[in-house]
Image (cartoon, rainbow, N blue to C red):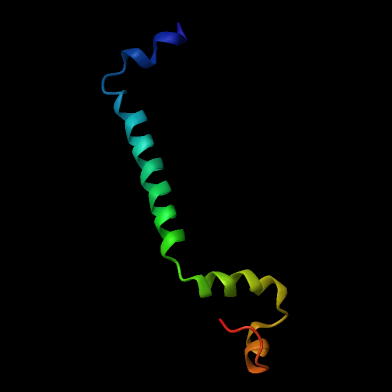
Length: 65
């Protein structure tokens, strides 16, 4: 009984296509973001959890953002 419910809905075949396109666009966008992001920004962000206070580190001449 439940096996044929989705087959009886008109236009249901568009939803898997839309979900695939959303996934594909998100994946490509994220890939482009990673490729074109400034490497200095990534390095600064990776050091943030290790710093006690980023503003004090910059004043002392520590890692720059």
